[in-house]
Image (cartoon, rainbow, N blue to C red; front, side, top):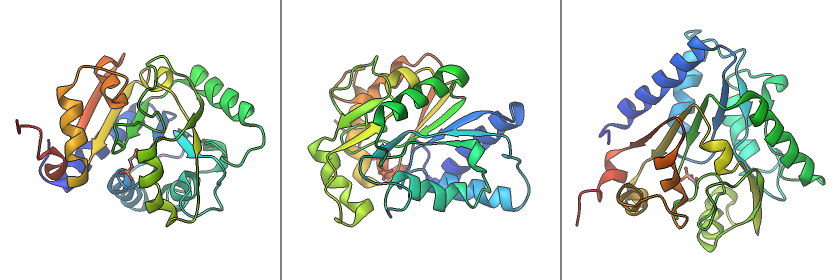
Length: 239
Ligand code: PGA
């Protein structure tokens, strides 16, 4: 638990920069949503100041809502491009993310599976859903799950309104599974803000179980770290 969000951001950013310094063509995976924004913003500042060189990294997508694409405000692709990829000057050949409007979802699944199988993920930054979901791996997800189309949980359907301002009625999504995520070489889970304090407490105090997918990282094959700010960490020590 790190009280100060700036300090938390600096630690995660430092970690990412070290990975890319050691391996300039590292494969990185970033969740969309509110949680990773401070990390992305800080990386953009470093990039603009020419303090980092991310010109050879590869980006793989974590997830996307089905029925929307980069043109749709609120989609993962739109947020990632506008808030991160474009300001970082990433080229198209560096980016492989899901197209939620594809009419060949099997190809989306096969392509993402192949890319992660071939290259592996060097670093993944993950937020946590209010129900403990990771990407769109909802409660009930098996630990061996692969890239696939999923039905959204009731909680996720309620929460997602904040990205789309209620304009869309989305029932399903596409996501990397835990077989991809648990094999990532560096895993950072991040939770910030009071609204996450209840689920953070449950994650910290639970054995790995399918009802709270985030707990699977207690079994990851490589280093996995959980960064929590003061507000999200509020309840951890309460009975
Ligand atoms: P958030 O989303 O970062 O917008 O809270 C997290 C998630 O649902 O994975």
